[in-house]
Image (cartoon, one colour):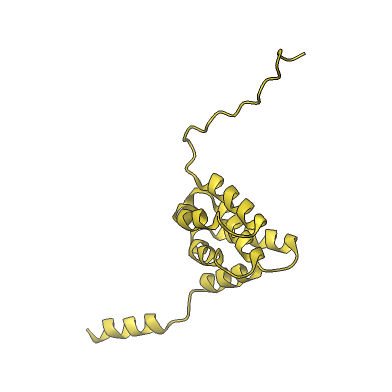
Length: 131
């Protein structure tokens, strides 16, 4: 019994896993002023996958629009495994920043489960047909 309690205390006192620290640092870097840096950070976070989802959802509420936009873009790169982020993404469609809304809409399209029929999009035909 004492061994189990000792292990629980040790586990509670243990520092976060290295991956958690990496995710936090990378999510924070989504604020970088350089768009190429933000894109590269998003790619790195997407490679980490599901451990990045909750911190990215939190980042959708950050004061910096670059971070919110980068978080949405990263969720798009993660794709369907980031489905748990959908409620936060739907809320973020009302963001005041146009770039954030663009990335959010992109993320929603990438996260929706593949294999569902998509609406047909056809270009309107000019009157009199094509010449």
